[in-house]
Length: 232
Image 1 (spheres, rainbow, N blue to C red):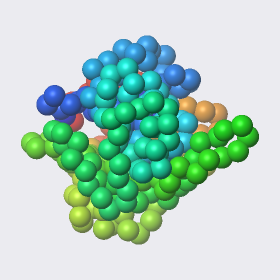
Image 2 (image 1 turned 60 degrees about the horizontal axis):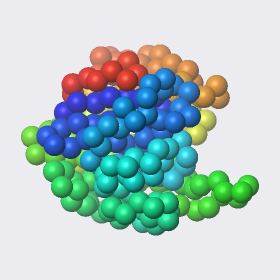
Image 3 (image 1 turned 30 degrees about the vertical axis):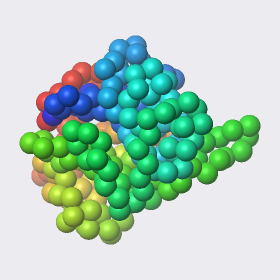
């Protein structure tokens, strides 16, 4: 499994014949200086944790141009279909869907989910985390935007994720100390990739606090260079 981080919560995950874009906020992302079309070239799937613009990002354009399958909660899928996306795979909390080459399960995240239209927020279902399972590959959990919560222990018991993509930027998600507590207390990740930081001034700008709070488990933290592919 190969991973590329594009800043914020945007990732490309590659395995087998699958090129999976997760929360592809590329255009307008202050942390990403590359070509959005190059970043999503060959995309087969687009997975969304929730409906905020800094997560849906380029999803409509990617899906319409490539025919990639859109996987998200019901309300986000309905909204995306209204944007012209045809290949949608609806799901919600507790469910698992076959995506062709892998499955995606949606787990709880404590956050919100909406789109801002003409000064009003349009509800787009409940936010979630996404568990990706593919034959012969490590189980990956993208937590989405979330606070710490005790049922993370159940997510670990049910899905046993080995790779964790974890928000650490504070204000809208867990900060470094709380995110580290969540990882140490509830999960048994072998690799942890922090995200949702450094993008906007109001967020924590580095992963230093998170790594420090991880203590003796700090070696599990992988901070990829933006736009550079790494092997998991």
